[in-house]
Image (cartoon, rainbow, N blue to C red; front, side, top):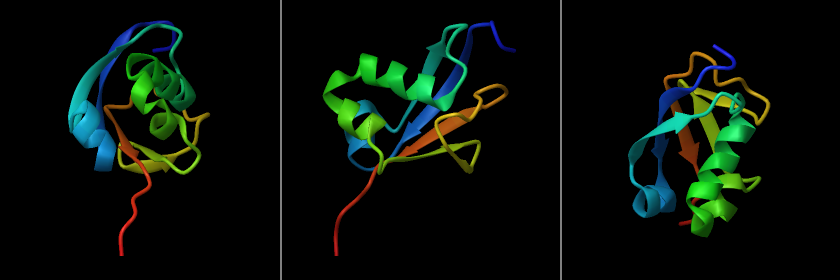
Length: 88
């Protein structure tokens, strides 16, 4: 599917869920093939949330499996963003 634009769902938790929405559908262009690309695209769309979207402590899951920035988005139906939380 590389080279073809596609849509995928992105779910947000914690403060990002409140700021962006619990789940959105996002259209990705042909060149956006990795989790790093997705994070950067979201940071461009939501610059006020870029620190959490691209922060090193924010974890991402693709179709329910934790993933790193080099993970491919090919065939992924949902990406989930899990920012750090605090509490006690």
